[in-house]
Length: 149
Ligand SMILES: [Zn+2]
Image (cartoon, rainbow, N blue to C red; front, top):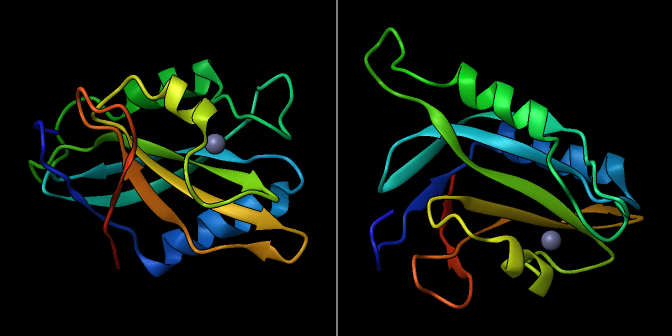
């Protein structure tokens, strides 16, 4: 992502539902997973890949299993047969009894300006609609990006 440019994130209803279902199932823990996709100005998610939450306290934090992340990064390297390239475009996680926005703790972990963050809030009743964010290069906060279907 170039400085000052915000992409749109295209997340199909099926992929939104997959994230919300995983988040609701993980409650009261945080869920997490990786997003595979393609594109620059409009980043289209093509796969939602759930990963284990390896955080010490999964009720309050998430940590994507580094081995799973490594395996996926390796699997998505190189162009597809149709000439398009796919890559890990970001990740998602949930905030049990919290809000669908990145926390201060998340900000401390947001070192990759290319990564798109999808966050949902969960409660006993289920999961909120997802929201998407990024932390542009040099920015000291997250900015919300538009989610399209
Ligand atoms: Zn968080």
